[in-house]
Length: 144
Image 1 (tube, rainbow, N blue to C red):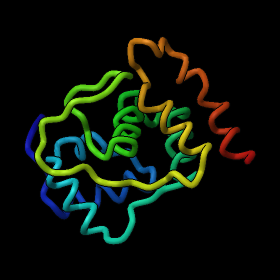
Image 2: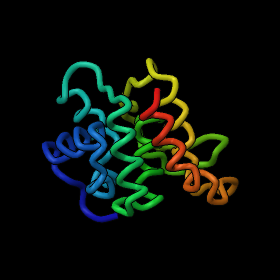
Image 3: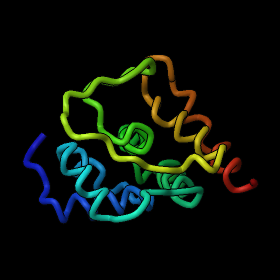
Image 4: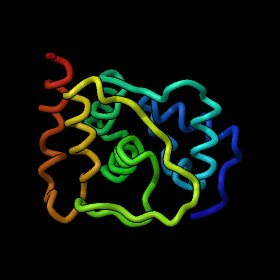
């Protein structure tokens, strides 16, 4: 990956990700874990998101504005609080010394379930199943 973004940019990109704007998720991936942690602190308070964020991600993905990879990396960041260097459905490995960011979305079971699914997007056992369910996921969040 190329040069790391500056700290102010990382904070802005993290805020965008928490709002479901993934247009620059690839740029955010270039940030170090320390930068992500500092950005989380700079945003202040508890880092959270909910249905509207996930609906935005799902709709943008369905409409072709996002790639599978962008959605996968966003879900990993929200689930793990980092961009792991290695990832499988069985676990992840990272070699950074800074702690992961803490993102809270646990008060909504539907959001939990969908983020949990999206983190596995494109993995060897997915076989396109997750992408085929995007409309059902949107309905699930819209109807409840």
